[in-house]
Length: 204
Ligand SMILES: CC(C)(COP(=O)(O)OP(=O)(O)OC[C@H]1O[C@@H](n2cnc3c(N)ncnc32)[C@H](O)[C@@H]1OP(=O)(O)O)[C@@H](O)C(=O)NCCC(=O)NCCS
Image (cartoon, rainbow, N blue to C red; front, side):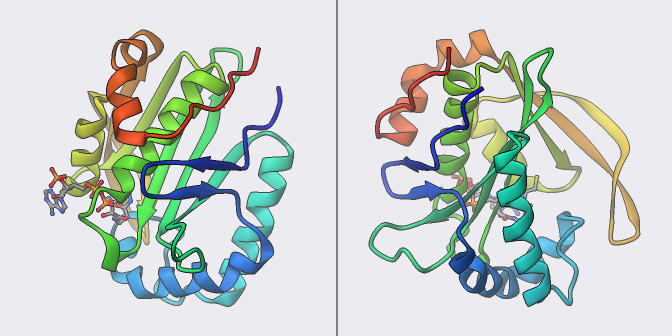
């Protein structure tokens, strides 16, 4: 498999792989948002610091090179050094062409459709480029903003995974949401509208 493009353009954002110099902007965005992130995300501990950000940037580079997971930084082209959040796609099963998407957006830019636009670009990448058959999201029960993103993108809520993840010592049920290849194909025009910009070239 070819690695996916390191940069994607959407209507309002550039969505691109991490470089070493992204460490400080990432850290600044996480620190600003830590209360919101900590509520739902296991990695977002309250003392998140430079070492964590350095490790993330190093590990995302390795996962990318190994073709396992693809983390993207979300930025505005007119303000490229301000980190808006992360959106990622990774393989759950290569054999069955299944993938998963994850995301977070910094608190001061939430509620402006940043996540929906960037996650839509991941959906398109997953189906059109990585050749996935199914993409899933796992969302902690009670995370209404994330559920809203899933609904806006057209994911179907499929069920509840009990005690799926431990978030800072508390086991949390998660809903699982799925989208299948044929559902995406039916909704392709809507995705083109949300994302704008050219679709990445599909892998064979
Ligand atoms: C979830 C998250 C990524 C959403 O990012 P975002 O850029 O604000 O998302 P969007 O603006 O595209 O869409 C958010 C939607 O949720 C709605 N929303 C926000 N807070 C809400 C709440 N408490 N209850 C219900 N809906 C809510 C917004 O109004 C918006 O819907 P609308 O477009 O119909 O008005 C962001 O809030 C976040 O990073 N949260 C913390 C980390 C996290 O939960 N990550 C996801 C783990 S699965």
